[in-house]
Amino acid sequence: MNGRRLAIAIAFGCIVGHARADELLVRGFLSGTFLRYDDATGAFLGTIDTDLPGANAVVRGPDGDLFAASGANEIRRYDGETGALRGRFVWDDPATPDDESHGLDHATGLAFGPDGNLYAAGYVSNSVIRYDGRTGAFIDVFVAPRSGGLNGADIGMEFGPDGNLYVASQLTDSILRYDGNDGHFIDAFVPALRGGLRRPSAFVFRPDGFLYVSSTSTDRVLRFNATTGAFDRGFVSVGSGGLDAPTGLAFGPDGNLYVSSAMTNSVLRFDGATGAFIDEFVHAGAGGLMYPTGLLFSPSFHLRLGAPSPGVAGMDNALRVEGATPSGSIVFVLGTAPGQTHVPGCAGVALDLASPRVVGTATADAFGIATLTRFVPSRLQGRQLAIEVVERSTCRASRLLEFVFR
Image (tube, rainbow, N blue to C red; front, side):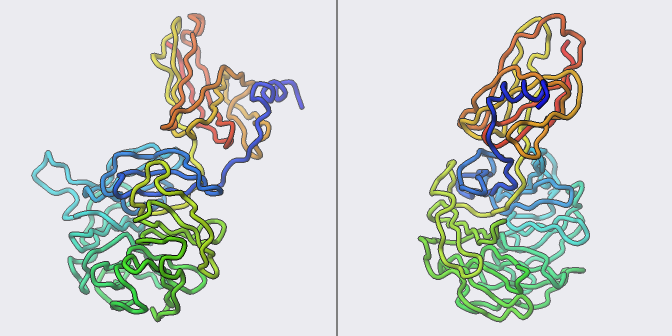
Protein backbone atom coordinates (compact mmCIF):
# COMPACT_ATOMS: atom_id res chain seq x y z
CA MET A 1 0.00 0.00 0.00
CA ASN A 2 1.45 3.37 -0.99
CA GLY A 3 1.86 6.21 1.48
CA ARG A 4 -1.25 8.08 0.45
CA ARG A 5 -3.52 5.02 0.69
CA LEU A 6 -1.95 4.06 4.03
CA ALA A 7 -2.65 7.52 5.42
CA ILE A 8 -6.28 7.31 4.30
CA ALA A 9 -6.63 3.83 5.81
CA ILE A 10 -5.35 5.03 9.16
CA ALA A 11 -7.54 8.15 9.11
CA PHE A 12 -10.64 6.14 8.23
CA GLY A 13 -9.97 3.75 11.08
CA CYS A 14 -9.69 0.76 8.72
CA ILE A 15 -13.26 0.80 7.48
CA VAL A 16 -14.79 -2.63 7.19
CA GLY A 17 -17.90 -2.59 5.02
CA HIS A 18 -19.41 -3.20 1.64
CA ALA A 19 -21.42 -0.88 -0.55
CA ARG A 20 -25.09 -1.88 -0.54
CA ALA A 21 -26.48 -2.76 -3.95
CA ASP A 22 -30.05 -1.86 -3.05
CA GLU A 23 -32.39 -0.26 -0.56
CA LEU A 24 -36.09 -0.89 -0.07
CA LEU A 25 -38.12 2.30 -0.43
CA VAL A 26 -41.51 2.34 1.30
CA ARG A 27 -44.35 4.85 1.13
CA GLY A 28 -46.36 5.49 4.30
CA PHE A 29 -49.93 6.54 3.46
CA LEU A 30 -51.04 7.62 6.94
CA SER A 31 -47.62 8.85 8.06
CA GLY A 32 -47.18 10.85 4.84
CA THR A 33 -43.61 9.57 4.55
CA PHE A 34 -41.16 8.20 2.00
CA LEU A 35 -38.68 5.98 3.87
CA ARG A 36 -35.51 3.94 3.25
CA TYR A 37 -34.64 0.50 4.64
CA ASP A 38 -31.60 -1.75 4.30
CA ASP A 39 -32.32 -4.37 1.63
CA ALA A 40 -30.43 -7.07 3.55
CA THR A 41 -31.67 -6.52 7.12
CA GLY A 42 -34.75 -4.31 6.88
CA ALA A 43 -33.16 -1.79 9.25
CA PHE A 44 -34.39 1.79 8.96
CA LEU A 45 -31.88 3.95 7.07
CA GLY A 46 -33.53 7.34 6.93
CA THR A 47 -36.12 9.48 5.18
CA ILE A 48 -36.55 10.85 1.69
CA ASP A 49 -39.67 12.88 2.43
CA THR A 50 -41.71 13.35 5.62
CA ASP A 51 -44.40 15.67 4.27
CA LEU A 52 -46.18 13.75 1.53
CA PRO A 53 -49.89 13.43 2.38
CA GLY A 54 -51.57 10.26 1.16
CA ALA A 55 -48.36 8.63 -0.04
CA ASN A 56 -49.07 6.04 -2.76
CA ALA A 57 -47.06 4.55 -5.66
CA VAL A 58 -43.41 5.26 -6.44
CA VAL A 59 -41.65 4.53 -9.75
CA ARG A 60 -38.27 5.20 -11.31
CA GLY A 61 -38.34 7.16 -14.56
CA PRO A 62 -36.30 6.63 -17.74
CA ASP A 63 -33.92 9.37 -16.58
CA GLY A 64 -33.27 7.57 -13.27
CA ASP A 65 -35.25 9.99 -11.10
CA LEU A 66 -37.95 8.84 -8.68
CA PHE A 67 -41.59 9.89 -9.01
CA ALA A 68 -44.04 9.60 -6.11
CA ALA A 69 -47.84 9.94 -6.16
CA SER A 70 -49.70 11.76 -3.42
CA GLY A 71 -53.35 11.76 -2.43
CA ALA A 72 -52.94 15.55 -2.24
CA ASN A 73 -53.33 15.56 -6.04
CA GLU A 74 -49.69 15.91 -6.94
CA ILE A 75 -46.71 13.93 -8.16
CA ARG A 76 -43.28 14.77 -6.75
CA ARG A 77 -39.90 14.19 -8.35
CA TYR A 78 -36.72 13.18 -6.50
CA ASP A 79 -33.09 12.98 -7.62
CA GLY A 80 -32.46 9.33 -8.45
CA GLU A 81 -28.90 9.37 -7.10
CA THR A 82 -29.37 11.28 -3.86
CA GLY A 83 -33.10 11.13 -3.11
CA ALA A 84 -33.23 14.93 -2.82
CA LEU A 85 -36.58 16.51 -3.67
CA ARG A 86 -36.42 18.21 -7.07
CA GLY A 87 -39.94 19.60 -6.75
CA ARG A 88 -43.52 18.98 -7.79
CA PHE A 89 -43.75 17.38 -11.20
CA VAL A 90 -47.53 17.46 -11.60
CA TRP A 91 -49.86 19.57 -9.46
CA ASP A 92 -52.70 22.03 -9.53
CA ASP A 93 -51.37 25.50 -8.71
CA PRO A 94 -53.99 27.13 -6.43
CA ALA A 95 -52.75 30.56 -7.50
CA THR A 96 -54.09 30.07 -11.02
CA PRO A 97 -57.69 29.63 -12.23
CA ASP A 98 -56.77 26.60 -14.35
CA ASP A 99 -56.23 23.03 -13.17
CA GLU A 100 -52.72 22.23 -14.41
CA SER A 101 -53.21 18.56 -13.48
CA HIS A 102 -56.30 18.42 -15.75
CA GLY A 103 -58.50 16.52 -13.34
CA LEU A 104 -56.12 14.24 -11.43
CA ASP A 105 -57.89 13.53 -8.16
CA HIS A 106 -56.12 11.55 -5.42
CA ALA A 107 -53.10 10.30 -7.39
CA THR A 108 -52.44 6.61 -6.76
CA GLY A 109 -50.83 4.48 -9.50
CA LEU A 110 -47.90 5.60 -11.67
CA ALA A 111 -46.29 4.02 -14.72
CA PHE A 112 -43.92 5.16 -17.43
CA GLY A 113 -45.07 3.99 -20.83
CA PRO A 114 -43.13 2.73 -23.85
CA ASP A 115 -43.40 6.31 -25.17
CA GLY A 116 -41.39 7.61 -22.18
CA ASN A 117 -44.34 9.54 -20.77
CA LEU A 118 -45.80 9.33 -17.26
CA TYR A 119 -49.25 7.82 -16.72
CA ALA A 120 -51.05 8.63 -13.46
CA ALA A 121 -54.20 7.05 -12.05
CA GLY A 122 -56.65 8.92 -9.84
CA TYR A 123 -58.55 7.03 -7.16
CA VAL A 124 -61.36 9.59 -7.10
CA SER A 125 -61.22 10.77 -10.71
CA ASN A 126 -61.24 7.11 -11.88
CA SER A 127 -59.15 7.96 -14.90
CA VAL A 128 -55.58 7.71 -16.17
CA ILE A 129 -53.91 10.92 -17.30
CA ARG A 130 -50.78 11.11 -19.44
CA TYR A 131 -48.07 13.72 -18.80
CA ASP A 132 -44.85 14.54 -20.59
CA GLY A 133 -42.16 12.32 -19.02
CA ARG A 134 -39.58 15.12 -19.07
CA THR A 135 -41.57 18.21 -18.08
CA GLY A 136 -44.79 16.99 -16.43
CA ALA A 137 -46.90 18.93 -18.94
CA PHE A 138 -50.38 17.57 -19.59
CA ILE A 139 -50.75 15.53 -22.78
CA ASP A 140 -54.19 13.91 -22.61
CA VAL A 141 -56.72 11.93 -20.60
CA PHE A 142 -55.54 8.49 -21.67
CA VAL A 143 -58.26 6.45 -19.93
CA ALA A 144 -61.53 8.34 -19.67
CA PRO A 145 -63.26 8.55 -16.27
CA ARG A 146 -64.96 5.23 -15.35
CA SER A 147 -64.05 3.66 -18.69
CA GLY A 148 -64.81 -0.06 -18.50
CA GLY A 149 -66.30 0.46 -15.05
CA LEU A 150 -63.06 1.76 -13.48
CA ASN A 151 -63.84 2.66 -9.89
CA GLY A 152 -61.21 3.29 -7.22
CA ALA A 153 -58.09 3.16 -9.41
CA ASP A 154 -55.41 2.08 -6.95
CA ILE A 155 -51.60 1.89 -6.90
CA GLY A 156 -51.59 -1.18 -9.13
CA MET A 157 -50.93 0.07 -12.69
CA GLU A 158 -48.47 -1.37 -15.22
CA PHE A 159 -47.89 -1.81 -18.90
CA GLY A 160 -48.07 -5.58 -19.27
CA PRO A 161 -46.02 -7.99 -21.39
CA ASP A 162 -48.48 -7.45 -24.26
CA GLY A 163 -47.89 -3.67 -24.24
CA ASN A 164 -51.34 -2.86 -22.87
CA LEU A 165 -52.11 -0.89 -19.71
CA TYR A 166 -53.49 -2.74 -16.66
CA VAL A 167 -55.19 -0.90 -13.79
CA ALA A 168 -56.41 -2.17 -10.41
CA SER A 169 -60.06 -1.20 -10.01
CA GLN A 170 -60.38 -1.59 -6.27
CA LEU A 171 -64.06 -0.91 -5.80
CA THR A 172 -65.10 -3.36 -8.55
CA ASP A 173 -62.73 -6.10 -7.32
CA SER A 174 -61.06 -6.46 -10.72
CA ILE A 175 -58.02 -5.77 -12.90
CA LEU A 176 -58.94 -3.88 -16.08
CA ARG A 177 -57.02 -3.82 -19.36
CA TYR A 178 -56.74 -0.87 -21.76
CA ASP A 179 -55.16 -0.54 -25.18
CA GLY A 180 -51.56 0.61 -24.76
CA ASN A 181 -51.75 2.89 -27.80
CA ASP A 182 -54.98 4.83 -27.37
CA GLY A 183 -56.34 3.88 -23.91
CA HIS A 184 -59.64 2.38 -25.04
CA PHE A 185 -61.11 -0.32 -22.79
CA ILE A 186 -60.34 -3.90 -23.84
CA ASP A 187 -61.67 -6.11 -21.06
CA ALA A 188 -61.73 -7.03 -17.41
CA PHE A 189 -58.53 -9.08 -17.51
CA VAL A 190 -59.25 -10.40 -14.02
CA PRO A 191 -63.04 -10.14 -13.65
CA ALA A 192 -64.72 -9.20 -10.39
CA LEU A 193 -64.11 -11.63 -7.53
CA ARG A 194 -62.19 -14.18 -9.64
CA GLY A 195 -60.20 -16.44 -7.32
CA GLY A 196 -61.74 -14.59 -4.37
CA LEU A 197 -60.14 -11.27 -5.32
CA ARG A 198 -61.45 -8.45 -3.12
CA ARG A 199 -60.21 -4.86 -3.20
CA PRO A 200 -57.07 -5.32 -5.33
CA SER A 201 -54.42 -2.76 -4.53
CA ALA A 202 -51.10 -3.59 -6.25
CA PHE A 203 -49.98 -6.19 -8.75
CA VAL A 204 -46.75 -7.38 -10.37
CA PHE A 205 -46.16 -9.10 -13.70
CA ARG A 206 -43.28 -11.54 -13.32
CA PRO A 207 -41.18 -13.31 -15.97
CA ASP A 208 -42.44 -16.67 -14.63
CA GLY A 209 -45.66 -16.07 -16.59
CA PHE A 210 -47.84 -15.09 -13.65
CA LEU A 211 -49.53 -11.96 -12.34
CA TYR A 212 -49.38 -11.48 -8.55
CA VAL A 213 -52.16 -9.37 -6.98
CA SER A 214 -52.70 -8.14 -3.42
CA SER A 215 -56.25 -8.84 -2.27
CA THR A 216 -56.55 -6.22 0.44
CA SER A 217 -59.91 -7.21 1.94
CA THR A 218 -59.07 -10.93 2.21
CA ASP A 219 -55.47 -10.58 3.47
CA ARG A 220 -54.05 -12.71 0.63
CA VAL A 221 -51.85 -12.47 -2.44
CA LEU A 222 -53.35 -14.23 -5.45
CA ARG A 223 -51.66 -15.54 -8.59
CA PHE A 224 -53.15 -15.43 -12.09
CA ASN A 225 -51.98 -16.50 -15.54
CA ALA A 226 -50.29 -13.42 -17.04
CA THR A 227 -51.54 -14.24 -20.55
CA THR A 228 -55.15 -15.27 -19.96
CA GLY A 229 -56.01 -13.85 -16.53
CA ALA A 230 -57.11 -17.31 -15.36
CA PHE A 231 -56.83 -17.90 -11.63
CA ASP A 232 -53.85 -20.09 -10.72
CA ARG A 233 -53.80 -20.25 -6.93
CA GLY A 234 -53.66 -18.37 -3.68
CA PHE A 235 -49.96 -17.56 -3.44
CA VAL A 236 -49.85 -16.09 0.08
CA SER A 237 -52.50 -17.63 2.28
CA VAL A 238 -54.96 -15.68 4.40
CA GLY A 239 -53.20 -13.73 7.16
CA SER A 240 -49.91 -15.59 6.70
CA GLY A 241 -47.28 -14.17 9.05
CA GLY A 242 -49.86 -11.71 10.40
CA LEU A 243 -50.59 -10.19 6.98
CA ASP A 244 -53.38 -7.65 7.42
CA ALA A 245 -54.58 -5.54 4.47
CA PRO A 246 -51.83 -6.21 1.89
CA THR A 247 -51.23 -3.22 -0.36
CA GLY A 248 -47.83 -2.79 -2.09
CA LEU A 249 -45.93 -5.69 -3.68
CA ALA A 250 -42.34 -6.04 -4.90
CA PHE A 251 -40.02 -8.91 -5.71
CA GLY A 252 -36.61 -8.26 -4.18
CA PRO A 253 -33.10 -8.93 -5.48
CA ASP A 254 -33.19 -12.16 -3.44
CA GLY A 255 -36.16 -13.37 -5.52
CA ASN A 256 -38.57 -13.22 -2.61
CA LEU A 257 -41.88 -11.35 -2.42
CA TYR A 258 -42.20 -8.30 -0.17
CA VAL A 259 -45.69 -7.18 0.85
CA SER A 260 -46.87 -4.04 2.63
CA SER A 261 -49.06 -5.12 5.56
CA ALA A 262 -50.97 -1.88 5.94
CA MET A 263 -52.83 -2.52 9.17
CA THR A 264 -49.73 -3.80 11.00
CA ASN A 265 -47.51 -0.94 9.72
CA SER A 266 -44.91 -3.43 8.51
CA VAL A 267 -43.44 -5.11 5.42
CA LEU A 268 -43.51 -8.91 5.34
CA ARG A 269 -41.32 -11.23 3.27
CA PHE A 270 -42.53 -14.42 1.59
CA ASP A 271 -40.73 -17.12 -0.36
CA GLY A 272 -40.73 -16.10 -4.01
CA ALA A 273 -41.31 -19.66 -5.23
CA THR A 274 -43.80 -21.04 -2.73
CA GLY A 275 -45.37 -18.02 -1.01
CA ALA A 276 -44.43 -19.35 2.43
CA PHE A 277 -43.91 -16.74 5.15
CA ILE A 278 -40.24 -15.96 5.89
CA ASP A 279 -40.19 -13.02 8.28
CA GLU A 280 -41.32 -9.55 9.24
CA PHE A 281 -38.74 -7.70 7.15
CA VAL A 282 -39.56 -4.11 8.14
CA HIS A 283 -40.75 -4.18 11.74
CA ALA A 284 -43.99 -2.50 12.73
CA GLY A 285 -43.66 1.27 12.79
CA ALA A 286 -39.92 1.32 12.03
CA GLY A 287 -38.91 4.87 11.16
CA GLY A 288 -42.45 6.06 11.95
CA LEU A 289 -44.03 4.00 9.18
CA MET A 290 -47.85 4.00 9.20
CA TYR A 291 -50.02 2.19 6.65
CA PRO A 292 -47.31 1.27 4.12
CA THR A 293 -48.33 1.26 0.46
CA GLY A 294 -45.93 1.49 -2.51
CA LEU A 295 -42.63 -0.47 -2.48
CA LEU A 296 -39.59 -0.10 -4.70
CA PHE A 297 -36.10 -1.60 -4.58
CA SER A 298 -33.52 1.01 -5.48
CA PRO A 299 -29.74 1.38 -5.77
CA SER A 300 -28.18 2.98 -2.70
CA PHE A 301 -28.31 6.75 -2.63
CA HIS A 302 -25.34 9.07 -2.53
CA LEU A 303 -25.04 11.17 0.62
CA ARG A 304 -26.14 14.77 0.05
CA LEU A 305 -23.33 17.19 0.87
CA GLY A 306 -24.15 20.89 1.01
CA ALA A 307 -21.81 23.80 0.38
CA PRO A 308 -19.81 25.16 3.35
CA SER A 309 -21.75 27.77 5.34
CA PRO A 310 -21.21 30.70 5.33
CA GLY A 311 -18.49 29.91 2.76
CA VAL A 312 -16.16 32.65 4.02
CA ALA A 313 -12.48 32.18 4.88
CA GLY A 314 -11.17 33.45 8.22
CA MET A 315 -14.07 32.07 10.26
CA ASP A 316 -15.86 28.86 11.26
CA ASN A 317 -17.71 27.07 8.47
CA ALA A 318 -20.23 24.24 8.75
CA LEU A 319 -20.52 21.28 6.39
CA ARG A 320 -23.92 19.59 6.43
CA VAL A 321 -24.68 16.09 5.14
CA GLU A 322 -28.19 14.69 4.59
CA GLY A 323 -29.40 11.19 3.73
CA ALA A 324 -27.06 9.42 6.15
CA THR A 325 -27.96 6.40 8.24
CA PRO A 326 -29.18 7.52 11.70
CA SER A 327 -26.23 7.28 14.16
CA GLY A 328 -23.90 6.57 11.22
CA SER A 329 -20.31 7.86 11.34
CA ILE A 330 -19.51 10.27 8.50
CA VAL A 331 -15.92 10.95 7.40
CA PHE A 332 -15.21 14.34 5.80
CA VAL A 333 -12.39 14.39 3.26
CA LEU A 334 -10.69 17.42 1.67
CA GLY A 335 -8.50 17.75 -1.41
CA THR A 336 -7.26 20.34 -3.86
CA ALA A 337 -8.02 18.54 -7.10
CA PRO A 338 -10.24 15.79 -8.53
CA GLY A 339 -8.70 12.33 -8.89
CA GLN A 340 -9.21 8.73 -7.78
CA THR A 341 -8.34 7.27 -4.37
CA HIS A 342 -9.58 3.85 -3.26
CA VAL A 343 -11.40 3.72 0.09
CA PRO A 344 -9.86 0.91 2.19
CA GLY A 345 -12.32 -1.83 3.09
CA CYS A 346 -14.93 -0.65 0.57
CA ALA A 347 -14.79 -2.83 -2.51
CA GLY A 348 -15.25 -0.81 -5.68
CA VAL A 349 -15.59 2.52 -3.86
CA ALA A 350 -13.19 5.36 -4.64
CA LEU A 351 -13.06 9.02 -3.69
CA ASP A 352 -13.06 11.43 -6.63
CA LEU A 353 -10.11 13.24 -5.03
CA ALA A 354 -6.37 13.31 -5.56
CA SER A 355 -4.23 13.34 -2.38
CA PRO A 356 -7.23 13.51 0.00
CA ARG A 357 -6.96 14.47 3.66
CA VAL A 358 -9.47 13.57 6.38
CA VAL A 359 -10.55 16.74 8.22
CA GLY A 360 -12.99 15.25 10.71
CA THR A 361 -15.90 12.95 11.48
CA ALA A 362 -19.45 13.50 12.67
CA THR A 363 -22.33 11.28 13.77
CA ALA A 364 -25.67 11.53 12.00
CA ASP A 365 -28.74 12.31 14.06
CA ALA A 366 -32.08 10.47 13.99
CA PHE A 367 -32.99 12.27 10.76
CA GLY A 368 -29.80 11.24 8.96
CA ILE A 369 -28.17 14.68 9.23
CA ALA A 370 -24.53 15.13 10.19
CA THR A 371 -22.73 18.46 10.59
CA LEU A 372 -19.01 19.21 10.93
CA THR A 373 -17.78 22.70 11.84
CA ARG A 374 -14.17 23.74 11.21
CA PHE A 375 -12.22 27.00 11.14
CA VAL A 376 -11.15 27.98 7.62
CA PRO A 377 -7.90 29.98 7.55
CA SER A 378 -7.87 33.32 5.70
CA ARG A 379 -5.11 32.04 3.39
CA LEU A 380 -7.70 29.79 1.71
CA GLN A 381 -9.69 32.76 0.42
CA GLY A 382 -10.09 32.51 -3.35
CA ARG A 383 -8.75 28.94 -3.50
CA GLN A 384 -10.80 26.12 -4.94
CA LEU A 385 -11.07 23.09 -2.71
CA ALA A 386 -12.77 19.73 -3.29
CA ILE A 387 -14.80 18.04 -0.54
CA GLU A 388 -16.34 14.59 -0.26
CA VAL A 389 -17.82 12.47 2.54
CA VAL A 390 -18.09 8.72 3.17
CA GLU A 391 -20.27 6.79 5.60
CA ARG A 392 -18.20 4.19 7.47
CA SER A 393 -20.77 1.43 7.90
CA THR A 394 -22.21 1.43 4.37
CA CYS A 395 -19.33 2.77 2.24
CA ARG A 396 -21.75 5.28 0.67
CA ALA A 397 -20.15 8.46 -0.59
CA SER A 398 -21.35 11.88 -1.66
CA ARG A 399 -20.82 13.49 -5.01
CA LEU A 400 -17.66 15.57 -5.22
CA LEU A 401 -18.25 19.18 -4.16
CA GLU A 402 -15.87 21.81 -5.53
CA PHE A 403 -16.00 25.14 -3.75
CA VAL A 404 -14.18 28.50 -3.60
CA PHE A 405 -14.15 30.32 -0.24
CA ARG A 406 -14.89 34.04 -0.39
